[in-house]
Image 1 (cartoon, rainbow, N blue to C red):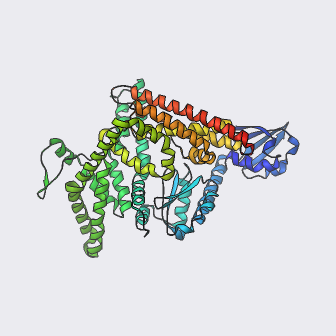
Image 2: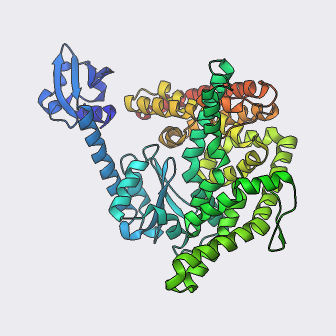
Image 3: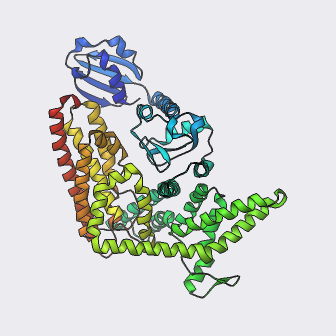
Length: 536
C-alpha cells in the first residue's frame, strides 16, 4: 500500500486531513505533524492496514510502515483485487475473447461490449480511464499495467501467443479504419520495449562519445553502437512475429520469411546490383532491414498459404509438407511481388511526408505538438506513428512526429507539475508531482489521465505549450535520428546531421513548451481553486 493510501486510511483517526500541518517521509517511517494531538485515536491508528507501529510525541505522529516484503505482498494483493475487479466489470472471463496490453493500457476484445460497465471499471482503484475504440475496450492503468494483466490472464487461462489471432477472428464486424488501427497497434505495440531500449542505449552511446568519456572506436563504444542499432536493424523479424500473431499464422514461419529477406546472401546480391530471378520471375533488389512495412504485407499474404495448406493437406504428411509449401510459396511471393510493392508504398509515404515537412513542416509539427494528447486518447497515435515512422526507416531520420511528441510530452508533464504547486491537497500534490516528472521524462499517460484530463485546464495549457514548442521545432527543422520515447532524458536523439543546430532548437522548443504549459496551467488552476476551494 502506498504512503498516501495509508495516510488516507488514518485520516478518520487523527482528526481529518485538516489536522495535518505537514508530512515527512523517511525509510519505512512516515512522520505526521499535527495541529491538535488530542484528536488522535492511537489504538485505531495502530490497527490500520500497512502500519506496524505508531507513536505520538509532542504533536508528531510517527507511523512505522510495513517492511518491504510485507509491502510487496500487499501490492500483490492490491493488483490481484484490481485484476479481479476489472474482470468482473468487463463482463467476466466468458466475455473476453482476447487480451493484450501496451505500455499503459489493458486492451480487451470482448464478445459483447454491452456487458462491460464503464462506470464500474472507472471506479476500480488504480484505473485512470476507459476508452472504447478500434474494436477494443481499453482500460488505462499506467506503467503498472502488466500486473493486473497477469492476474486476468491467469484467471481466464488465456494463451498470450493466441490472443491476437483470437482478436482478429472474434466474429465482430469492424469498420475498415478500426481494423487498420487495431492491426497496426497489435503489431507495433509489443515490439516497443525493444525499440525504446535500443533507442535509449543509443542515447547513452551518443552522450558518452560526445563527452569524450568513451571512444567510438573502443570495444565499449562499438558494443554500445551495435547493441543500440540491433532492434531497429532486425525490426522486420520482430514485426514478423507479432504480425503472424495478428493474422492467425505460425509466427516462426513468419520470422523465417523475414530472416530470408534479410539474409546476408540476398543482401550481397542486392549490393552487387546483378539481376536475380526465381523460377524465371524477376526479383526487385531491395534492402529489407529496418523496413517493417514490406514484411508485414508479406506475412499477411503468407498467412493465407499457411491456413490453406494446413486445412487441405493430409494429417499424415502435414507436419513437414505444410511448412515446406508455406515458406516456399510465401517467400517467392514476398520477394517477387509483395516485398517490392511494400517498398514502393513505403517510398511513396516517405516522399509524401518529406514534402509535407519541406513545405509546411512548421504546421505539421505544431499540430502534432498541440493535438498529441487527443491522438493518444483516441489511440490514433499508434496508427499515425507507424506511418510517420516509415520515413525514419527509409531515410534515417524523422522530422514531424518525434519533435511534436517531444514538446507535447514535456508540456503535459509541466502542466501536471503546475497543479502540484497550485493545489493545497496533499494527495493531489503527490499525484501531480509524480505524474509531472514522469511526463517530463516522456511517459505521459499518468499526467494525461491522472491530472490534466481530470481538471481539463492543464490539458488546454499542455496543448498550448505543445503547439508553441512544435512551431519552433518545425520552423528550425528539428529531426530525430533515433527512435525512442521523446522526453528530457532522451533529448540526444535529436543529435545528428552535420551540426548541433537541430539539437539546440529541440532543447529550446522543449524549454519553451515547459514554460508556457507550466505558467498557463498554474494561472488557470490557481484561479480555478480560488473559485472552487473544495476542489483544491
